[in-house]
Image 1 (cartoon, rainbow, N blue to C red):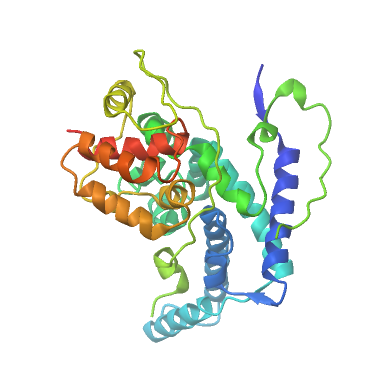
Image 2: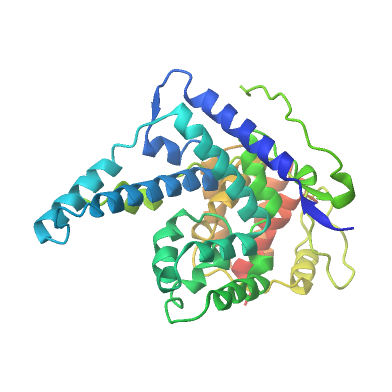
Length: 362
């Protein structure tokens, strides 16, 4: 049976998400600034897609000015003054709710597409730019891509050499196959939306026969001098709110004992990780704390370390000081597994142990 996207569910979800997020922010405010948009929700990709659209509108405004036939915009003094003006303008972002909400709807739908089908999403990005400007487009927009970035980032230094768009699209699909197993879990990415409104992947991806009638929107109640665009990627983004999600784990090719609640068994872990295929996953060089993605840092803090980021940082430093995988697992067992009541069979513990394994693997 063919699995399809339930576009009705996606549309209704995006509208409800945007409504709830705006209800929360605009309770006592009339406008939202660029800085606040960057931190609007725990789904960092949603926030940055809104900023990306503002960047596009900012560029359109500049091109509109330059299209005036009565003035010489190529004059160096005009160019410098116009650049300064546009940079100042970018730092004065003020958006009312009626204008932000539709931007949020589009951003949510784009983020979900990127999380669930990065190949199709990034291929559609290729279509947005003229062939001779693909390189420029990707470079300008790279800062706004926060999920599955390795699927497309490799292209940025290889575009602009006269290839047809289809070649770039094929390259994206091929690279996805190479890095697929190192990408962050789709469930974990989508779970970051749950801070505003839980996303039901089963309702979004459904069998063709199940899409029999248009989904009716459900009533959702709110839960309790460079330009700004040049610097936006350097701003602090909120760590995504990750909820416990059951995600499939690759099964080893040989039989090993299943994880159990209780201490982690170093030998079992080594066998399990050694027989799993991690194409594109290299050993971790340097400190563990420098190797965590923002989603992982928040997930480990919330799910394993009782929301205490300092405790996570201390744990990572202690693990870095260990001399072997066995010693690191013994330390984790002694200090954290029992004390914090970890479920050794959970996906998040599996991912944490996997990082330690990569830290000490040859």
